[in-house]
Length: 249
Image (cartoon, rainbow, N blue to C red):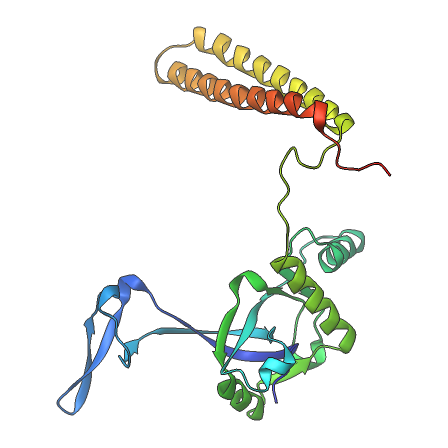
């Protein structure tokens, strides 16, 4: 039986390219393909499809894996570790394995004895396959490992983080003091942007032709950024009088 956290190698991913969508049809004793438009697709059509393979981890719940017709998997991508020294390497590994900054990925440490390198499970590219197909892959030795009980709990936690993120309004959470700092920050950004704008205009006045037009275009872009910053600051100032996310007792 397939379970959550099972790791497979050589799992097929079937992709349909709309620009190359072709139907396979019988022609005499052989077969041929003909183009087919997306709105012409129908049940039981036989299509020519692109197949790639990947290592993957089962993310469907184990109870679903007993009876669900299709199971969800996340592909595994290689975890690059090009850092030159052990300090930087360990910082990267530790941050990736514990940080919630990128909820779509989870770090798997790998195991050279079974041919599995350090990997990232990519929840954002999750796909499904028929349960009976995965069970057949397992029988054929394509299931090479499974997560420990603790690791499965962390996998479930990370899935919950991904699927239950609550968006917070820019002015819904800061206190008055936080917004004061934000206004100061925006003022500093505006000051820097105005200096850059003035420099671009000054440079443009000394030059001619295309280069002058490019510098003026840069100045106009900075003006647009300034307008955005000013609007942002106005909103922050207006929100300050009532901002208070911590209710008193």
